[in-house]
Length: 195
Image 1 (cartoon, rainbow, N blue to C red):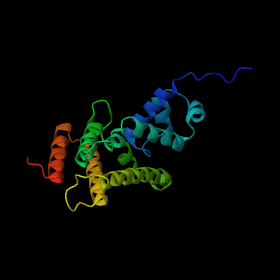
Image 2 (image 1 turned 60 degrees about the vertical axis):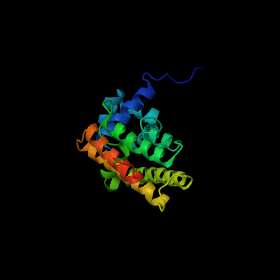
Image 3 (image 1 turned 180 degrees about the vertical axis):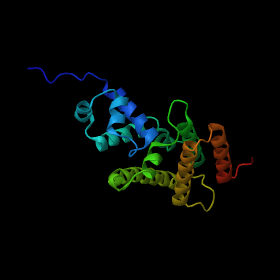
Image 4 (image 1 turned 45 degrees about the vertical axis):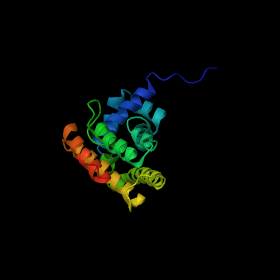
C-alpha cells in the first residue's frame, strides 16, 4: 500500500518564505496567520511539515545560517585575520541591506523583540551567536597577523558588536553606502591601514 498523499506544496520554497517573514517581522511579531499566508499552506500542512511555530523557527534559523548568513562561517576560511574581519563586516553590510532581503538581521531582530513567552527562542538565538563568536575567537587565536597586544576574545566580541550594529542601523534605514563607509572606517581603524 503506498504511503500518505504527497505534499501539495514545495516544502523548501515554503521554508524560504517563512524565513523572509520571520526576518522581516521577528519571531514574536510573526503570527501563524502570517506564516500560512506567506507559505501558501494551511495550518494542518504547516504542523505536519514543520511542527509548531517554534519548531519552524529552528528550521528557519538553520536555513538562515547556511544560506543568506553563510558568509559568517565562510569568513573563517580566509587566510588572514584581517581577511576574516573584512569578510564578516562587509558581508554584514551586504546581508542587511540587500535588495532582495529584508533590512537588518534575522537573529538580531528576533533577540531584541522577544517577550517572556518567547524566552526559549531568545536563548536559542543567543546560543548560536555565542557559538559563532567562540569560533571566531578560536580562528583569531590561530592567526599570525593580529595587531600586537590584541586579545582574540575581545576582538571577536568587537567584530560581533560591529556586525550587530550594522544590522540595527540597516533595520533603522541606513543605506548600503552609509554602512559601507562605516565598515571601511572600522576596518581601517582595526588594522591601522592608512585612509
